[in-house]
Image (cartoon, rainbow, N blue to C red; front, top):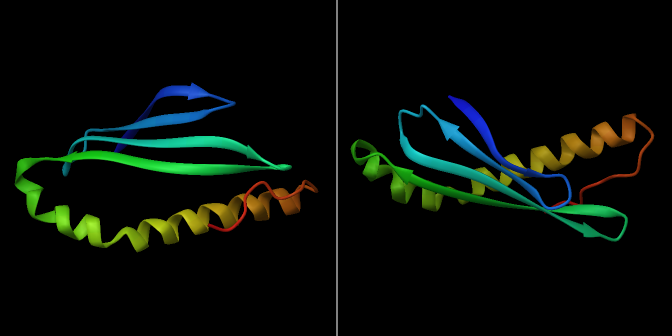
Length: 95
């Protein structure tokens, strides 16, 4: 899979489009950034359209939101660990 940044704003967020996917006809990750105190809140939206061959995966994706949330927790932990090791304050709170 390849990705393309289709919109970037350092203050408000980023939209990243999935390219050449076997499963998705169209997919975009949209990360909104919001200042919260002395940190940043990241809101993640996922928009996708499955290719007709993979329509049966729609319920699987819907009911496995927990896996995506786990991945976002890992992202949060990784960013906070980076900030800690670079003598900066944490930028993310746990989801």
